[in-house]
Image 1 (tube, rainbow, N blue to C red):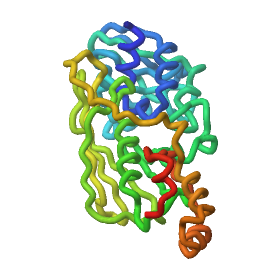
Image 2: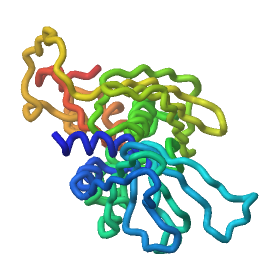
Image 3: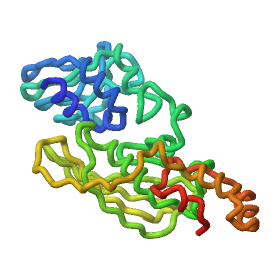
Length: 308
């Protein structure tokens, strides 16, 4: 459909890739298509900016303002996925943009400019403070195109060093914000090099290894103190029909609502007289910090009470 094609195209524009999927979908509904013949002015110096313009097909030439010295005129060409009219310091164009070939552009009218300035890269309708602990860990600060900064939250469970699952999750989150929102992760490979420091931010550098019609591949390096501590190779694929594979048979286990979580198991053990008092007193003194993801254990009621 047209909507899916527009959404997929917009997802290839680096400026837009860090936006929540909900914002990109709304932008896809709002953009207008404009066509130009060779030599047509796409934008004129001094005229009002009517919105963000993204090159859909063809080439356009950018020329410097008329009062610029000849030796410093930065003439250059805009190609597919390039854009202009966003982030300008004034409400008028500073340069001329002229079609070199037959040109097609997506234009996002100025009244929709707020869609480009969301408070979080995950959900345009929310702020990071309203997210769960898990979502806050995955929230990354965009420093530059393909560069993100993540943190280990003070209230998160500590493991003396950065938990490996956190590195994988944050690196995957960074990689996912450099591909179009219609491509989903289907494989990844992680390499742990050195231990991370819980008290320092982590810089995630995303390298765009390949962008294809159906697949996209990214390499992510996690750095602290200038050293690469972790590397992730991840592949994304657009949803497509494929071969059918025999699914693994699900074991016969009780539903989650019938199982105890970690906190409930701990509370039962603290009051269970079958556990030595020394163990119960020691466990009661330790601060219990719930994990970001609730875990329930497939044990029968008897084994849940037995000391280990």
